[in-house]
Figure (cartoon, rainbow, N blue to C red):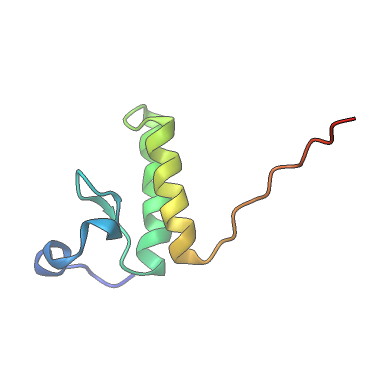
Length: 78
């Protein structure tokens, strides 16, 4: 993973972060996105991150990583 300097981090748009309001979990590239998912999982398991926050970070990271969202099985009505 490339080192992200303070100057580079400060120049990133808010949308680049997993939690934009707090400017946490930067994802300017694929390696940072994968790292953000891993750190979010760690913080969720420690109880420092809510399930909704973790899901938001994972969704954003998956977009950067090019992972397609899983389709929910459709329920057929009779």
